Length: 412
Image (cartoon, rainbow, N blue to C red; front, top):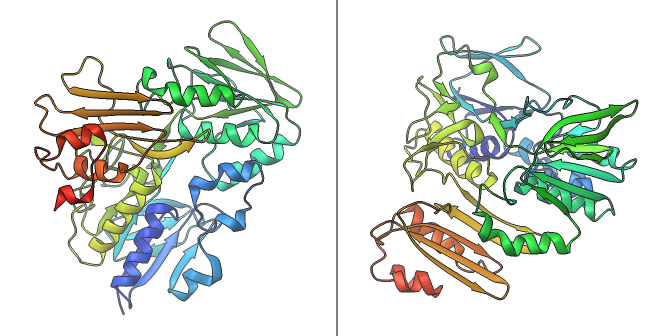
């Protein structure tokens, strides 16, 4: 009998690893344990569940019996509560002990709910992380005319636009000086802010929520640090995420915020691996240890983990602490690497032209590309990512990086 691969987590990293394992090991037994009731789905699409543009069936990854055909046993609604690395078993909340030969932690992350805000356990308060969250929010919106969203990150902005499209008033409350503060500096976000304002999104910066005010129906208002109170029927909290490590805490797996892994995605205990939001890896630009909650990074790391679990030694090149490419209010943008440059000894080039913004960041000596922000026109962003991630010498094409005329011929 072949190896039994057990994967805890059925999202990006877990499913990428499962498919990779099946390609490389036709005889192995692959079991995926997911704590969600729905089959695996494309998580970046869940904001479109809110406004009805997508149904759950449109974003699931299990169409046409795909997992069954590949011999991948996906068990939904199966949360893991304990781990024992000595007899090599995981135990589900129902009490079933499942043995493994090689184990992958792909447990993802959960929303961070600040303890400083009172009343977050109130009916009508949500955080958008899962398909179930999106479906519950869609139901609540039927009796809602004003939503207050806490946090100015990408997922909250996408959710806000989904609600605006349904004709619902949305107010975004952001503690930072500007939205998307993790991905760019305030002055760099002017094009995105203009698009948000034009779309009718109300934004309050430099303040935070202190209390969720309730009545018999649940949420009725949000009290702010500036003394104002916003009447509303729904609150969405988007204040970051925390790696899911609860059931691992009592084991001998090393954890520091997330699960620590080596350059081959392996944990400190033999035959255990980690990938995705839950894993702590290194940033190839800064060298710092980071966790990132990004679908594409999770897929890349899941593939790498799957190869290593199958015995194919593969090095993971790391994850940008900051890396995102998406569209907000019809404004496409990319942010990668070192983008916060104030008070840093770096070389920066900025170009503003009409509906485009470009920021190129080099190291102190100007010999290496370490960061970039593109808004409006994101042409060739993939090549900039390649140059940053692979630490490519830039002496032959630095001027083309600055003028945005880089092409693949420069790498030949």
